[in-house]
Structures are given as structure tokens and as C-alpha cells.
Amino acid sequence: QVHVVESGGGLVHPGGSLSLTCEVSGSIFRLVAMGWYRQAPGKERELVATVNSGGGTDYADSVKGRFTIARDNSLNTVYLQMSSLKPEDTAVYYCNGRGYLNYRDVFDSWGQGTQVTVSS
Image 1: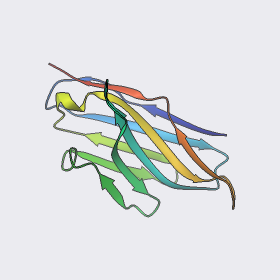
Image 2: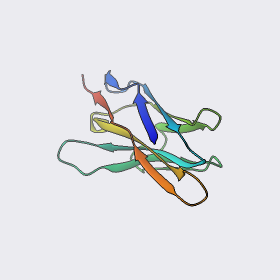
Image 3: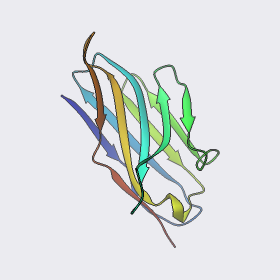
């Protein structure tokens, strides 16, 4: 069983900053990739940023230069530092973890989501 737990959402003014944290735990053999996705009301879930086990990152164009993703492999934890936030960043942010339970079985697990609201 793999558990994904996010924390750090909340309400922030436009231009402000907010940090999200996500821990992946359980009987994990290898955690390959971790990432953040978001879903705004009436829209589909979209990629925000991902980071692989080697530290390689990928960002949505809409957040490049404003958001930074980082991971601590020793803690199976991923962080998302968000700055210069805009009202259009308002969404439920979901953490995702993908990897191997053993040499054969893979997992692709999601957290429950944390609300980020950018409003004056």
C-alpha cells in the first residue's frame, strides 16, 4: 500500500508565495517520479511540474519561472515552491508518485489534493 499525503495549501493574495509538501510512504521498492498536478473548477487535471529520481524536472509553460519543484530522495518527499501567484493558479493541487513496489509491480498513486486559492 502506497500513501501520498499533501500539505501546505491555503489562501494567498495575488503576487504572493506558497509552498506545498508531499510525502510518499509505504512498501516502496523504488520511487521513480514525483509530481504536482492541478485541477481548477470546470477544467481537466493538468501537469504543473514533475521531478524524476535523478533530479530532472519538467514544468508547465504557465508556471515556468514562478514555481520550483524539488525532492528529497531520502524522505520520499517532493516540494513545490510557488511565487508570483496569479488568480488563475487557483485549483486543487494533487501530488503524484510513481515507481516500483518490487522488481515487477508498479504503482501510480495520488494524494487527496490540497486547495490553493489566489484571491484579493
